[in-house]
Length: 184
Image 1 (cartoon, rainbow, N blue to C red):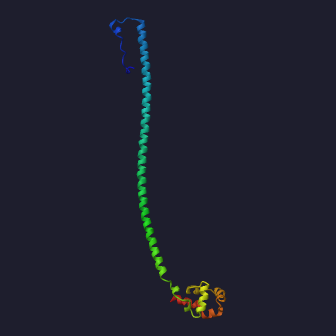
Image 2 (spheres, one colour):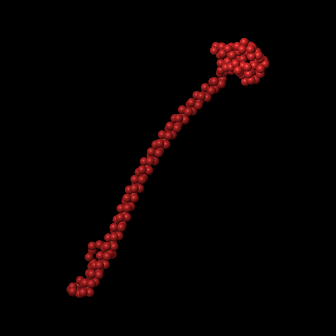
Image 3 (cartoon, helix red, strand yellow):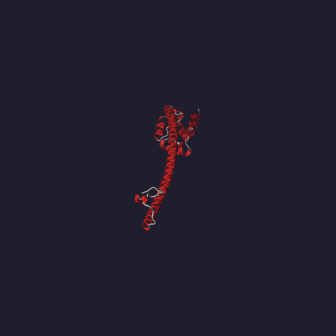
């Protein structure tokens, strides 16, 4: 195949002889010219296809490069968010651990020190002796504050169970005595 735009070389015999208006030779040159033009057209078509393919590949490459830049940027942003999350999580975990320790210490201190009404014995209320105390403890009444919170209906309900008379509990004023003990 000849380079486009080049002129075909004449055979050596034609160059040495004088050019005659020979119809056969003209036909031959015309056929060669037509063949060369056809080759040129085909080559030009192939060149356009290759150029078009090259341009499409350049576009795809540019799109791929843009995607890589976007992914790289997203990856950096994700890494930064992860680092911020880890820092925030560590800080909140440390704060929560400190609060748990604080609450555990308060709970331990509270469990060591009895409440004011737990330090008071039911027998400090005039009229409650060892027998009534055992009976009240058997009913689940263990603190002076529980006695202070008894209503008249509750007194009527528990009196027969501890083998006491309602009027005696009211006369001795167990509820009033319990309230005074708690206020001291």
